[in-house]
Length: 76
Image (cartoon, rainbow, N blue to C red):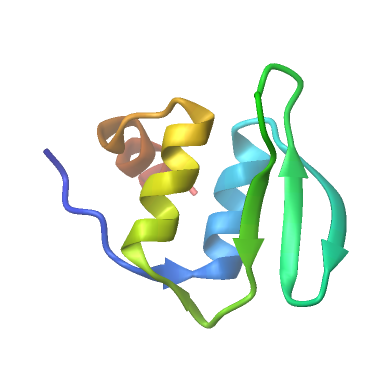
């Protein structure tokens, strides 16, 4: 299983756009992304580096495994 490490929020934003999410709105320092088949929005705080627990929670919402996530990041 690939190890998930903290990454910059802009890199994670590129990942979200790559998997089909679209930017909906921004409230304070949180950006909200949405995709049609999702049950809830993906919330992305604009911290310098995203902590691992935020990345894992957003992957769970997107129904993407850590293996798929690391493969997609290699392509970006």
